[in-house]
View (cartoon, rainbow over the protein chains, first blue to last red):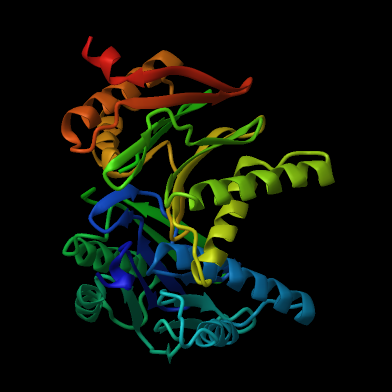
Length: 205
Length: 201
Protein backbone atom coordinates (compact mmCIF):
# COMPACT_ATOMS: atom_id res chain seq x y z
CA UNK A 1 0.00 0.00 0.00
CA UNK A 2 1.59 3.25 -1.13
CA UNK A 3 0.46 6.31 0.79
CA UNK A 4 0.26 8.44 -2.34
CA UNK A 5 -2.13 5.98 -3.97
CA UNK A 6 -4.41 5.45 -0.94
CA UNK A 7 -7.09 7.87 -2.10
CA UNK A 8 -6.29 8.08 -5.83
CA UNK A 9 -6.59 11.13 -8.05
CA UNK A 10 -4.66 13.15 -10.58
CA UNK A 11 -4.03 16.74 -11.66
CA UNK A 12 -2.39 18.25 -14.72
CA UNK A 13 -1.71 21.75 -16.03
CA UNK A 14 -0.78 23.07 -19.46
CA UNK A 15 0.47 26.33 -20.90
CA UNK A 16 -1.26 27.97 -23.84
CA UNK A 17 -1.07 31.28 -25.68
CA UNK A 18 -1.72 33.90 -23.02
CA UNK A 19 -3.54 31.34 -20.93
CA UNK A 20 -3.04 28.30 -18.71
CA UNK A 21 -5.34 25.41 -17.92
CA UNK A 22 -5.46 23.11 -14.91
CA UNK A 23 -7.58 19.98 -14.65
CA UNK A 24 -8.24 17.14 -12.25
CA UNK A 25 -10.47 14.15 -11.73
CA UNK A 26 -13.18 14.20 -9.03
CA UNK A 27 -12.95 10.81 -7.39
CA UNK A 28 -12.49 10.39 -3.68
CA UNK A 29 -12.03 6.82 -2.52
CA UNK A 30 -10.37 4.64 0.05
CA UNK A 31 -8.25 2.20 -1.94
CA UNK A 32 -10.69 0.37 -4.23
CA UNK A 33 -13.88 1.77 -2.68
CA UNK A 34 -15.25 4.98 -4.24
CA UNK A 35 -16.92 7.33 -1.75
CA UNK A 36 -17.48 10.64 -3.54
CA UNK A 37 -17.56 11.94 -7.12
CA UNK A 38 -17.26 15.62 -6.31
CA UNK A 39 -14.02 15.88 -4.38
CA UNK A 40 -12.25 19.18 -4.88
CA UNK A 41 -8.53 18.87 -5.57
CA UNK A 42 -7.95 22.21 -7.30
CA UNK A 43 -8.21 25.36 -5.21
CA UNK A 44 -8.38 28.99 -6.24
CA UNK A 45 -5.63 30.89 -4.43
CA UNK A 46 -6.08 34.13 -6.33
CA UNK A 47 -8.08 35.47 -9.28
CA UNK A 48 -5.54 34.01 -11.72
CA UNK A 49 -3.78 31.45 -9.55
CA UNK A 50 -4.86 27.87 -8.99
CA UNK A 51 -3.16 25.03 -7.15
CA UNK A 52 -3.96 21.33 -7.51
CA UNK A 53 -3.13 18.99 -4.64
CA UNK A 54 -3.35 15.31 -5.60
CA UNK A 55 -2.26 12.68 -3.11
CA UNK A 56 -3.51 11.74 0.35
CA UNK A 57 -6.88 13.46 0.79
CA UNK A 58 -6.34 14.54 4.39
CA UNK A 59 -3.12 16.28 3.38
CA UNK A 60 -4.89 17.83 0.37
CA UNK A 61 -7.23 19.52 2.85
CA UNK A 62 -4.52 20.35 5.40
CA UNK A 63 -2.03 21.78 2.89
CA UNK A 64 -4.78 23.86 1.31
CA UNK A 65 -5.70 25.29 4.72
CA UNK A 66 -2.09 26.03 5.66
CA UNK A 67 -1.36 27.54 2.25
CA UNK A 68 -4.42 29.77 2.39
CA UNK A 69 -3.26 30.98 5.82
CA UNK A 70 0.24 31.85 4.58
CA UNK A 71 -1.10 33.44 1.42
CA UNK A 72 -3.57 35.61 3.34
CA UNK A 73 -0.77 36.86 5.61
CA UNK A 74 1.42 37.55 2.56
CA UNK A 75 -1.31 39.56 0.88
CA UNK A 76 -2.02 41.50 4.07
CA UNK A 77 1.65 42.39 4.57
CA UNK A 78 2.45 43.08 0.91
CA UNK A 79 -0.91 44.65 -0.06
CA UNK A 80 -0.73 43.03 -3.46
CA UNK A 81 -1.59 39.78 -5.20
CA UNK A 82 1.16 37.17 -5.14
CA UNK A 83 3.08 36.25 -8.29
CA UNK A 84 2.82 32.59 -9.34
CA UNK A 85 6.58 32.13 -9.08
CA UNK A 86 6.58 33.43 -5.52
CA UNK A 87 3.60 31.26 -4.64
CA UNK A 88 5.41 28.25 -6.03
CA UNK A 89 8.36 29.04 -3.77
CA UNK A 90 5.97 29.40 -0.83
CA UNK A 91 4.49 25.93 -1.48
CA UNK A 92 7.96 24.45 -1.84
CA UNK A 93 8.99 25.98 1.47
CA UNK A 94 5.87 24.69 3.23
CA UNK A 95 6.58 21.15 2.05
CA UNK A 96 10.32 21.16 2.78
CA UNK A 97 9.65 22.30 6.34
CA UNK A 98 8.30 18.78 6.76
CA UNK A 99 11.26 17.12 5.06
CA UNK A 100 11.38 14.15 7.46
CA UNK A 101 7.64 13.74 7.99
CA UNK A 102 6.17 15.08 4.76
CA UNK A 103 2.71 15.98 3.59
CA UNK A 104 1.70 13.37 1.02
CA UNK A 105 0.70 15.71 -1.77
CA UNK A 106 2.39 16.57 -5.08
CA UNK A 107 1.24 20.11 -5.88
CA UNK A 108 0.59 21.45 -9.36
CA UNK A 109 0.44 25.24 -9.76
CA UNK A 110 -1.01 27.15 -12.70
CA UNK A 111 -1.48 30.87 -13.03
CA UNK A 112 -0.92 34.15 -14.83
CA UNK A 113 1.40 36.84 -13.53
CA UNK A 114 -0.86 39.56 -12.09
CA UNK A 115 1.16 42.34 -13.78
CA UNK A 116 2.58 40.95 -17.03
CA UNK A 117 -0.08 38.20 -17.57
CA UNK A 118 2.72 35.77 -18.41
CA UNK A 119 1.50 32.14 -18.16
CA UNK A 120 3.17 30.07 -15.44
CA UNK A 121 2.97 26.42 -14.47
CA UNK A 122 4.98 24.39 -12.00
CA UNK A 123 4.83 21.14 -10.10
CA UNK A 124 6.73 19.65 -7.21
CA UNK A 125 7.22 16.40 -5.37
CA UNK A 126 6.07 15.78 -1.83
CA UNK A 127 9.11 17.46 -0.30
CA UNK A 128 8.93 20.54 -2.47
CA UNK A 129 11.39 19.98 -5.31
CA UNK A 130 10.12 22.37 -8.00
CA UNK A 131 9.79 21.65 -11.69
CA UNK A 132 9.14 24.67 -13.92
CA UNK A 133 8.73 23.55 -17.54
CA UNK A 134 7.57 25.33 -20.66
CA UNK A 135 4.83 22.89 -21.66
CA UNK A 136 2.87 20.84 -19.10
CA UNK A 137 3.02 19.30 -15.64
CA UNK A 138 1.29 16.19 -14.31
CA UNK A 139 0.84 14.54 -10.92
CA UNK A 140 -1.17 11.75 -9.33
CA UNK A 141 -1.71 8.01 -9.51
CA UNK A 142 -1.90 8.05 -13.32
CA UNK A 143 1.06 10.38 -13.83
CA UNK A 144 2.71 8.06 -16.33
CA UNK A 145 -0.45 7.88 -18.43
CA UNK A 146 -0.78 11.66 -18.22
CA UNK A 147 2.80 12.11 -19.39
CA UNK A 148 2.11 9.98 -22.42
CA UNK A 149 -1.12 11.77 -23.32
CA UNK A 150 0.33 15.26 -22.81
CA UNK A 151 3.46 14.50 -24.84
CA UNK A 152 1.28 13.27 -27.69
CA UNK A 153 -1.33 16.05 -27.67
CA UNK A 154 0.37 19.24 -26.48
CA UNK A 155 1.72 21.80 -28.87
CA UNK A 156 2.86 25.36 -28.16
CA UNK A 157 0.67 28.46 -28.45
CA UNK A 158 -2.72 26.83 -28.17
CA UNK A 159 -5.66 29.23 -27.97
CA UNK A 160 -7.88 28.88 -24.87
CA UNK A 161 -10.57 26.80 -26.61
CA UNK A 162 -8.02 24.43 -28.16
CA UNK A 163 -6.16 24.25 -24.87
CA UNK A 164 -9.40 23.20 -23.17
CA UNK A 165 -9.93 20.38 -25.67
CA UNK A 166 -6.33 19.26 -25.41
CA UNK A 167 -6.17 19.18 -21.63
CA UNK A 168 -9.58 17.48 -21.38
CA UNK A 169 -8.63 14.69 -23.76
CA UNK A 170 -5.26 14.21 -22.08
CA UNK A 171 -6.93 13.95 -18.66
CA UNK A 172 -9.80 11.67 -19.64
CA UNK A 173 -7.85 9.17 -21.66
CA UNK A 174 -5.17 8.97 -18.99
CA UNK A 175 -7.48 8.40 -16.02
CA UNK A 176 -9.55 5.88 -17.99
CA UNK A 177 -6.48 3.67 -17.73
CA UNK A 178 -6.24 4.06 -13.95
CA UNK A 179 -8.58 2.20 -11.62
CA UNK A 180 -8.38 4.73 -8.78
CA UNK A 181 -8.72 7.95 -10.78
CA UNK A 182 -11.63 9.29 -12.74
CA UNK A 183 -15.33 9.48 -11.86
CA UNK A 184 -15.69 12.90 -13.45
CA UNK A 185 -13.36 15.71 -14.42
CA UNK A 186 -13.07 19.45 -13.90
CA UNK A 187 -11.09 21.92 -16.02
CA UNK A 188 -10.23 25.55 -15.28
CA UNK A 189 -8.98 27.67 -18.21
CA UNK A 190 -7.34 30.83 -16.90
CA UNK A 191 -7.11 33.78 -19.21
CA UNK A 192 -6.30 37.44 -18.59
CA UNK A 193 -9.93 38.56 -18.34
CA UNK A 194 -11.77 35.44 -17.20
CA UNK A 195 -11.54 31.97 -15.79
CA UNK A 196 -13.78 29.32 -17.37
CA UNK A 197 -14.58 26.29 -15.27
CA UNK A 198 -16.13 23.29 -16.97
CA UNK A 199 -17.18 19.89 -15.68
CA UNK A 200 -16.37 17.02 -18.02
CA UNK A 201 -18.81 14.28 -18.94
CA UNK A 202 -16.72 11.15 -18.46
CA UNK A 203 -17.04 7.43 -17.93
CA UNK A 204 -18.27 7.03 -14.36
CA UNK A 205 -16.26 4.00 -13.46
CA UNK B 1 -16.43 -4.79 12.99
CA UNK B 2 -18.48 -1.74 13.81
CA UNK B 3 -20.80 -0.12 11.35
CA UNK B 4 -22.43 3.27 11.04
CA UNK B 5 -24.82 4.39 8.30
CA UNK B 6 -26.10 7.84 7.43
CA UNK B 7 -28.57 9.33 4.95
CA UNK B 8 -29.21 13.04 4.43
CA UNK B 9 -32.40 14.22 2.70
CA UNK B 10 -34.09 17.54 2.10
CA UNK B 11 -35.55 17.85 5.60
CA UNK B 12 -33.59 15.58 7.91
CA UNK B 13 -30.49 13.46 8.45
CA UNK B 14 -30.86 9.93 9.74
CA UNK B 15 -28.00 8.01 11.36
CA UNK B 16 -27.85 4.34 12.32
CA UNK B 17 -25.12 2.62 14.30
CA UNK B 18 -24.67 -0.91 15.55
CA UNK B 19 -24.93 -1.44 19.30
CA UNK B 20 -22.36 -4.16 19.85
CA UNK B 21 -19.43 -3.49 22.15
CA UNK B 22 -16.84 -6.25 21.89
CA UNK B 23 -13.21 -6.94 22.77
CA UNK B 24 -11.74 -9.54 20.42
CA UNK B 25 -14.03 -12.58 20.68
CA UNK B 26 -15.96 -11.41 23.73
CA UNK B 27 -19.13 -9.34 23.42
CA UNK B 28 -19.38 -6.93 26.34
CA UNK B 29 -22.80 -5.49 25.61
CA UNK B 30 -25.40 -5.38 22.87
CA UNK B 31 -26.97 -2.02 23.71
CA UNK B 32 -24.08 0.43 23.43
CA UNK B 33 -24.93 3.97 22.33
CA UNK B 34 -22.34 5.05 19.78
CA UNK B 35 -23.99 8.35 18.93
CA UNK B 36 -22.90 11.55 20.63
CA UNK B 37 -25.08 14.62 20.79
CA UNK B 38 -22.64 17.49 20.22
CA UNK B 39 -25.41 20.08 20.38
CA UNK B 40 -29.14 20.35 19.68
CA UNK B 41 -28.39 20.39 15.97
CA UNK B 42 -25.27 18.19 15.74
CA UNK B 43 -25.07 14.41 16.07
CA UNK B 44 -21.99 12.24 15.67
CA UNK B 45 -21.89 8.46 15.24
CA UNK B 46 -18.39 7.20 16.04
CA UNK B 47 -16.53 3.95 15.40
CA UNK B 48 -12.92 2.98 15.96
CA UNK B 49 -10.50 2.25 18.79
CA UNK B 50 -12.29 1.72 22.07
CA UNK B 51 -11.60 4.65 24.34
CA UNK B 52 -10.39 6.93 21.55
CA UNK B 53 -14.00 7.11 20.37
CA UNK B 54 -15.38 8.39 23.67
CA UNK B 55 -12.38 10.63 24.42
CA UNK B 56 -12.43 12.30 21.04
CA UNK B 57 -16.22 12.62 20.82
CA UNK B 58 -16.51 14.10 24.31
CA UNK B 59 -13.61 16.49 23.65
CA UNK B 60 -15.37 17.80 20.54
CA UNK B 61 -18.72 17.91 22.35
CA UNK B 62 -17.34 20.00 25.20
CA UNK B 63 -15.59 22.38 22.83
CA UNK B 64 -18.76 22.87 20.81
CA UNK B 65 -20.59 23.70 24.05
CA UNK B 66 -17.79 26.05 25.12
CA UNK B 67 -18.04 27.98 21.86
CA UNK B 68 -21.77 28.36 22.45
CA UNK B 69 -21.21 29.62 25.98
CA UNK B 70 -18.50 32.08 24.96
CA UNK B 71 -20.16 33.47 21.86
CA UNK B 72 -23.87 33.06 22.53
CA UNK B 73 -24.56 31.15 19.33
CA UNK B 74 -23.75 27.68 18.06
CA UNK B 75 -21.22 26.64 15.46
CA UNK B 76 -22.80 25.90 12.09
CA UNK B 77 -22.49 22.31 10.81
CA UNK B 78 -19.69 23.12 8.32
CA UNK B 79 -17.80 25.04 11.00
CA UNK B 80 -18.21 22.22 13.50
CA UNK B 81 -17.13 19.64 10.91
CA UNK B 82 -14.04 21.61 9.96
CA UNK B 83 -13.19 22.19 13.62
CA UNK B 84 -13.46 18.44 14.22
CA UNK B 85 -11.35 17.71 11.15
CA UNK B 86 -8.68 20.19 12.27
CA UNK B 87 -8.43 18.45 15.67
CA UNK B 88 -8.19 15.03 14.06
CA UNK B 89 -5.62 16.22 11.50
CA UNK B 90 -3.48 17.78 14.24
CA UNK B 91 -3.58 14.55 16.24
CA UNK B 92 -2.67 12.46 13.18
CA UNK B 93 1.03 13.31 13.24
CA UNK B 94 1.31 13.46 17.01
CA UNK B 95 2.63 10.86 19.40
CA UNK B 96 -0.70 9.08 19.77
CA UNK B 97 -3.27 9.73 17.06
CA UNK B 98 -6.98 9.19 17.59
CA UNK B 99 -8.15 6.12 15.71
CA UNK B 100 -11.76 7.12 15.03
CA UNK B 101 -14.03 7.06 11.99
CA UNK B 102 -17.32 8.86 12.17
CA UNK B 103 -20.32 10.44 10.53
CA UNK B 104 -21.30 13.93 11.60
CA UNK B 105 -24.90 15.00 11.03
CA UNK B 106 -25.89 18.63 11.33
CA UNK B 107 -28.88 20.83 10.73
CA UNK B 108 -28.81 24.57 10.25
CA UNK B 109 -31.70 26.90 9.46
CA UNK B 110 -29.73 28.46 6.63
CA UNK B 111 -28.44 25.45 4.76
CA UNK B 112 -30.66 22.61 5.98
CA UNK B 113 -29.45 19.12 6.84
CA UNK B 114 -25.85 18.07 6.14
CA UNK B 115 -23.90 14.85 6.53
CA UNK B 116 -20.09 14.68 6.82
CA UNK B 117 -18.01 11.52 6.51
CA UNK B 118 -14.62 11.55 8.20
CA UNK B 119 -12.06 8.80 8.60
CA UNK B 120 -9.16 8.32 11.02
CA UNK B 121 -6.77 10.14 8.67
CA UNK B 122 -8.98 13.25 8.84
CA UNK B 123 -10.14 13.05 5.23
CA UNK B 124 -13.56 14.68 5.11
CA UNK B 125 -16.35 14.72 2.55
CA UNK B 126 -19.83 16.20 2.63
CA UNK B 127 -22.13 13.68 1.07
CA UNK B 128 -25.83 12.71 0.77
CA UNK B 129 -25.24 9.25 2.25
CA UNK B 130 -22.26 7.50 3.80
CA UNK B 131 -21.14 4.48 5.78
CA UNK B 132 -18.22 3.17 7.81
CA UNK B 133 -17.09 -0.37 8.46
CA UNK B 134 -17.39 -3.70 6.68
CA UNK B 135 -21.17 -3.54 7.01
CA UNK B 136 -20.95 -0.20 5.28
CA UNK B 137 -19.48 -1.80 2.19
CA UNK B 138 -22.72 -3.72 1.60
CA UNK B 139 -24.90 -0.81 2.57
CA UNK B 140 -23.40 1.90 0.39
CA UNK B 141 -24.48 0.04 -2.74
CA UNK B 142 -28.04 -0.32 -1.42
CA UNK B 143 -28.10 3.41 -0.69
CA UNK B 144 -26.85 4.13 -4.22
CA UNK B 145 -29.81 2.18 -5.56
CA UNK B 146 -32.62 3.61 -3.41
CA UNK B 147 -31.51 7.10 -2.35
CA UNK B 148 -33.49 10.18 -3.42
CA UNK B 149 -33.11 13.65 -1.89
CA UNK B 150 -36.88 13.89 -1.28
CA UNK B 151 -37.25 10.73 0.81
CA UNK B 152 -39.62 10.80 3.76
CA UNK B 153 -38.44 9.69 7.17
CA UNK B 154 -40.28 6.36 6.83
CA UNK B 155 -38.71 5.70 3.44
CA UNK B 156 -35.22 6.50 4.74
CA UNK B 157 -35.82 4.22 7.75
CA UNK B 158 -36.86 1.50 5.28
CA UNK B 159 -33.64 1.90 3.35
CA UNK B 160 -31.71 1.54 6.60
CA UNK B 161 -33.72 -1.60 7.38
CA UNK B 162 -32.75 -3.01 3.99
CA UNK B 163 -29.09 -2.20 4.73
CA UNK B 164 -29.23 -3.81 8.16
CA UNK B 165 -30.95 -6.91 6.74
CA UNK B 166 -28.10 -7.28 4.25
CA UNK B 167 -25.45 -6.76 6.92
CA UNK B 168 -27.05 -9.36 9.14
CA UNK B 169 -27.29 -11.79 6.26
CA UNK B 170 -23.84 -11.40 4.74
CA UNK B 171 -21.43 -10.09 7.37
CA UNK B 172 -19.73 -12.84 9.32
CA UNK B 173 -19.73 -10.73 12.50
CA UNK B 174 -23.09 -10.80 14.27
CA UNK B 175 -24.53 -7.27 14.68
CA UNK B 176 -28.05 -7.90 15.96
CA UNK B 177 -29.09 -4.37 16.99
CA UNK B 178 -28.88 -1.02 15.20
CA UNK B 179 -29.78 2.21 16.92
CA UNK B 180 -31.41 4.88 14.74
CA UNK B 181 -31.59 8.62 15.40
CA UNK B 182 -32.97 11.35 13.19
CA UNK B 183 -31.94 15.02 13.19
CA UNK B 184 -34.24 17.65 11.74
CA UNK B 185 -35.37 21.20 12.42
CA UNK B 186 -36.95 20.07 15.68
CA UNK B 187 -33.75 18.52 17.02
CA UNK B 188 -32.65 14.96 17.64
CA UNK B 189 -35.12 12.12 18.01
CA UNK B 190 -34.54 8.41 18.49
CA UNK B 191 -36.46 5.99 16.28
CA UNK B 192 -37.08 2.29 16.92
CA UNK B 193 -33.98 0.13 17.27
CA UNK B 194 -33.63 -2.18 14.27
CA UNK B 195 -33.32 -5.66 15.76
CA UNK B 196 -32.61 -8.88 13.92
CA UNK B 197 -35.82 -10.49 15.32
CA UNK B 198 -37.95 -7.70 13.86
CA UNK B 199 -36.39 -8.02 10.44
CA UNK B 200 -36.89 -11.76 10.00
CA UNK B 201 -40.49 -11.52 11.27
